[in-house]
Amino acid sequence: MKKGFLFLIIISFLYSCKKKHPHVIDTPIVSNNSTKLLTLKVDYLTNTFEGAIETEYNIYSPTFTVSNLYTSPGDFGYIQLKYQELNEVIFSGSIIWMGLGQIQYPINLLPSSQFDSVNTNDIVNPVSGFEDVFNPYNQPFDYSPVWLSIQKLVIVREYLQSNPNATIKLFLYMPSVGFGNPADADWFIFLKK
Image (cartoon, rainbow, N blue to C red; front, side):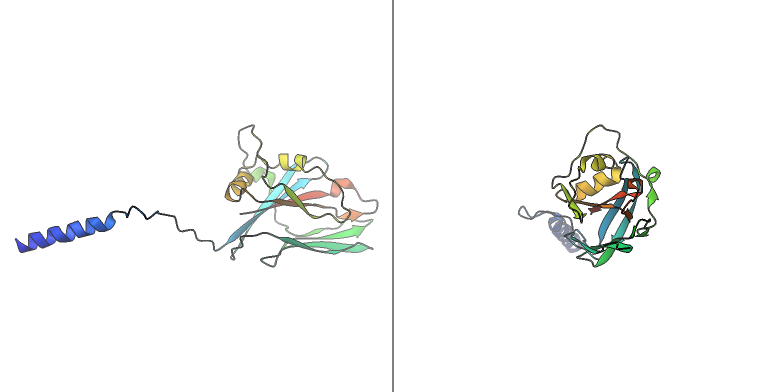
């Protein structure tokens, strides 16, 4: 009888431990030990989405600031963009006067055919707008056509959902200057998750 009574006390004790205290709110434990960055490429003349790459860094950063290092092309120049908080290069490319520069990073963009789009006609716009992270001549640009070419991508919407107040960072890469061909230029767009 003592064993049965002791067993009943242990079971009721264990059951009471499972009950939630009315003032305790369960919150999921979020592990922020990495940062993801989505880099997208859009053709300058046609606003056609050409490809993208997602990069994951083993450090978490709640903010996303882009710094640039620019050498004006007297003959040869370059532009390098860094994710400042992580000290990571996110874009690097040469710029050639009366020639054609090349992208050094990122070079392994996945083609646009690898990315799914939503099947709806809604348009999702960034709440905090756009930030042109490199515009040496302060040219006025309409970013809407560029945004419209990528906003239907499932991965872009996932990034927006995970970071709804983010400012969309972008810049126009012009690998040639002087009598350069605008058909060689591309937009690069950066979203942080």
